[in-house]
Length: 171
Image (cartoon, rainbow, N blue to C red):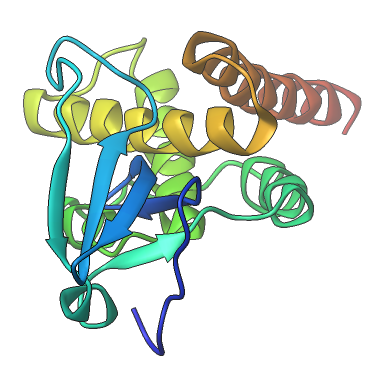
């Protein structure tokens, strides 16, 4: 994360694809809790020194306009022909960048569709991780539950695939 991130209670931020809510700042420590509780987190809250925020991989959630743009520019692009490189996919997921996460989802979803719905174990795990990361942020930005956000992402992918199939038939 470059620059400084000014936080106040109630802010939603992202770290490694997880949406966190700032609970408060006290004694130069920031308290967080996951925005979407799961069995993994179990209502977990934690705090870190405020000075560690600037040098860490924290960022604000994207805006609604940016999200709309990403849906159009990434999920709306033609399906890639080549299979994604697993090493590049892993490194992009650690970058805390929603654009890269959508690109990974698109590439792995495309590969999955071209192989009768099957991805190798490692790629399937990466696909699920990328989808989980994107779902959390889309849900937070749109103010919806994660299941509905996942449906939105999948519908965007499927509608583009249908558009391409129709174009190929007409061509």
